[in-house]
Image 1: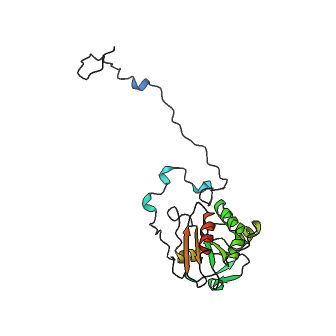
Image 2: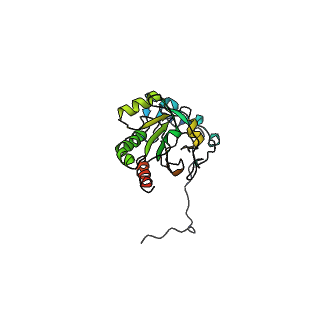
Image 3: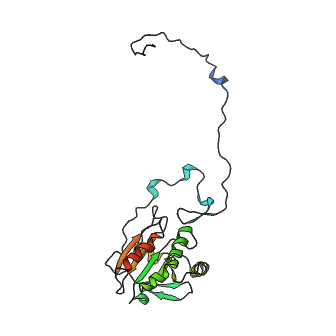
Length: 226
């Protein structure tokens, strides 16, 4: 059996002496750097639902913003259950002026989404489209709002055969007035759905950025209970 090593065992250690000029004779190791440029082709982010380009991404860590540069944002929306949301007047996909008052007298499902033609927003819009008859049966109207202009909404609604109204909130004025919280330090517009009853009172506020279809399930569930 081999003896166990013990810290008390004294053994002579050979010494190694290098000549003073030995370090200078060591081979020079090359430094490895990834100097290939990033492609400039724009791409769609499947995760965030934003249209990004490689030019917007910094190539050097030193140019990344520090955490102190991010502004503190509130995670609570101004419009909450049991309140009446502030009024608005916006243009729809046909360029016609639409006011919130127009929808009084019937339940309204109003959803804010980040942008037309992004993967998550397209999935959500098509889910509302596929369940539209259920919303009609519940007596509810469906309206989508984003910062895209009317022309973008028109193309989006035509391409995916959306049977409901899309409103253009350019500059995100209504989004800010309603207090729709953003995601990722406010860099991504929030995905939030409101169910407003026939008296103009909010009965549901639902926020879920990464499961767009859940908005349809939750709103239908509430509408059936009204």
